[in-house]
Amino acid sequence: MVSLARKNLLHDRLRFVITVAGVAFAVTLVLVQVGLFMGLLDKSTVTIRHASADLWITSHNTPNVDFARTFPETAVLRARSVPGVERADNLIVSFMNIQLPNGALEGALVYALQDFGAWRLPWNVPEGAPADLRRGYSVLMDRSAALRYGAFTVGEQREILGRRFRIVGTTQEAASFTTTPIECPQGTPTSSATCRNIANFQLSPTFGQPNNKLAYQQPRTFRISLGVRF
Image 1 (cartoon, rainbow, N blue to C red):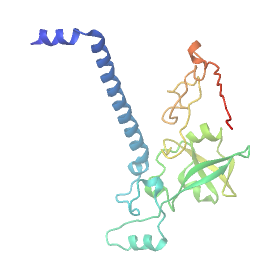
Image 2: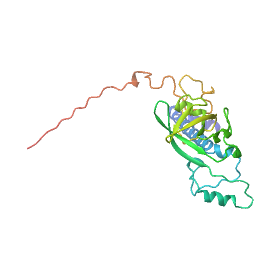
Image 3: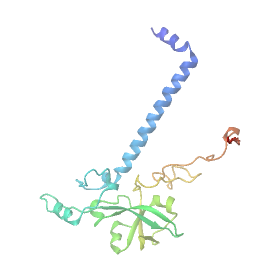
Image 4: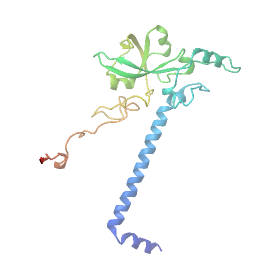
């Protein structure tokens, strides 16, 4: 039976090769989709996984924490009044525009909380501390923002919604999947601190360059004839 099956497969080798290539391509697409799904799932739950909260209360049909709607303060007070609740706070998540030093505007996802330290957020702070946010108009910026907004250092200021905010520290691994995909600069190793766990993609050195003569589009000539009949 094995020899018969082998002969049947190898009888038409061209058809066999095409079939194997088609199946391999389909399996590759499935693996790519699974990888994208797992990556999106990891990014969309990163805040929930690192926070010390035991229970999250969200609006109806909220897909993830980045699209959550802010509750009124009365709802927070009701949650605090439930017996057995030790602490409850209102996490505010909003998309805002940040003005760069060159005058350009870029979108940013902003998290606001009464006491970040009580909820162990953010979980990775290489510079500064969450307690520094109590100094007034202060902000912690994730290191991944340097690839989109340009290099920044602690002590600089950025304008958000018409107000100047002082950068009092940096965070890491807090990039949201809802923001614009971040590019790792060409020539920079993906394993470097600049791109590792920060960038989403990197263009190849030959991206946008023709590799052969077929990469050039041949000029096309269109001839149109019009006739008028009376």
